[in-house]
Length: 160
Image 1 (tube, rainbow, N blue to C red):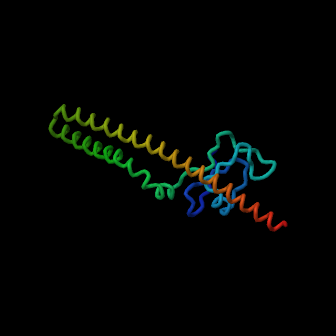
Image 2: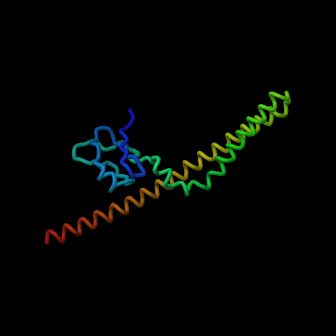
Image 3: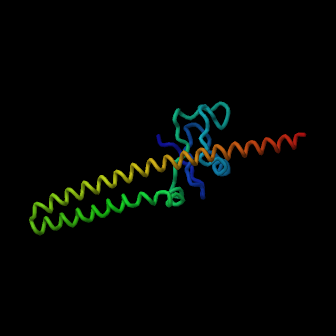
């Protein structure tokens, strides 16, 4: 079963709701974006914790737009893959029209180069996304702790 995916406008990640959990409010998602709850944490008493290793957040399209400058170095791999694809197509057309076996071999070579470049792009993109997401998670944890500390300090002042 696919988890419920909650998207809030302007938030760069979608929240994946574990089975049996209530849908969080937009406000909760905004103030806790990319915060990774600790193991066995539940939003309400009596609920089952999320399964071990549960991924609460997944980047969405706004993430890609915001992170575009970080992904820019990877574009060379995508360009190389596209160029190899066009060269493969040109070699195939040439091989068909000219009946030249060397052009068939060139098409195969360009195809392999294109596939390799695309694979390198995807692997590097996944790795970079994981690093950026880990950075966002650490920042969310720090921001949440600071917010909770401020709220507790306000509570102490108000209670006195």
